[in-house]
Image (cartoon, rainbow, N blue to C red; front, side, top):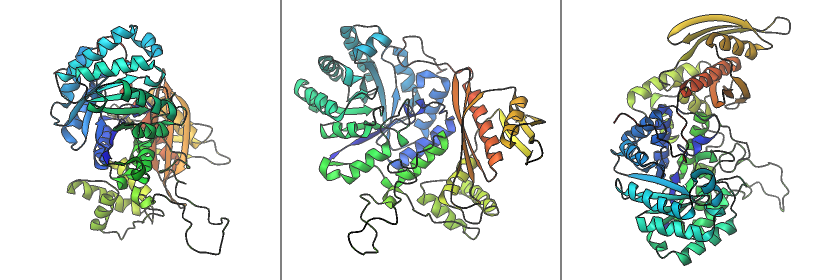
Length: 520
């Protein structure tokens, strides 16, 4: 059985989802969990885009072991390759990923070069990357709308220049499984080096076909697939990792493939991505949705039986899902607590485990039964967020059917404590108006969602919201047993994310302009 490599690009292409801004600490934490999931290749960013992206990639390269770490570099900018390599130079398993547009539409709009010039650029980019590492991946953007002969020429040029992996990207989510099979078959027949390089596919989900197209590519000879956790990404997102690996696991014999993924880390990874990004999942999302393994109790029966119907082709426990979930209580010992965290995929040093256990014990005073969802949210909220401009210290709200809603807020701004109060149409509105007044900010609230994190009337409330300011969009997220407090925390989280983006250079992956150059 041939090995299929899982190339995870959650930290690069996935973070193109509107409003998805992660701090460096959050990126490192997610990278460690993806390594625990045992993805084969982990794309950790575009180091030449900004100092923050460079520092995040550099930290991940120093702290994360296991996967091959890939970094992006533009074919049009030679300095990108030097910057990319310096970010991962301490990592023995590293890859440089570069690309050019394959379709006429993309080439004319972004590159302003002829087909011949683009082929020359492809070969030159691979050669530049080869100066730093033998592991070079070359991507053809929008390959499935391109002229097949141009695709053959680009593939041949990249292979001749020394690319170890050639990736065909369905950048706009245009292809069908028939298109994928047809192009791979054409390349097998036309490219002499087809068997000497590894072929990969990168599918977007605009038509809901990303997983189907990825499976078609594997059946046609691809040895690697790009994907993101929960399918996050720009527009309709990318091929969802959890759906792809589940399908390949169920049909491993049919495809004749094997994976290195630890399936029991699939669900914990999905949950972590949802918590960090604030992007919720629809209940009926395959594999990791709330209803993915929920069956109707009353169903038409062919005969009298009390046995569970044979609905499941993949047991949820194999994905790390515990239906109903084991609950922890105030009587849970430290050893039981630490063991349970390990089963959920979390690894902490002894001092941090002790601190988390103290937080857990304090939490059990508010909530009798602590579900896995509560525990994960507690851990996420307790991990040090780093340097923040705004911190919420105190919130008191009065509201009712007679009184006008009023909020009193104590907020730390740039290290100084401020206090103020204000009115609103409801308790959340009063809190938001007061915080906006104190920060001097007035972003547009474009989305506001409240959900219970676990069963029961004492469940924590999880608030996800989206803010827009001067064309910049961010997500804010927070949890608390008090919905108004959770809302205020989520707003402050969003304001901090907006503040971090001020002054950040916006660099297109296609432009020929000078990129940011770090102090090396």
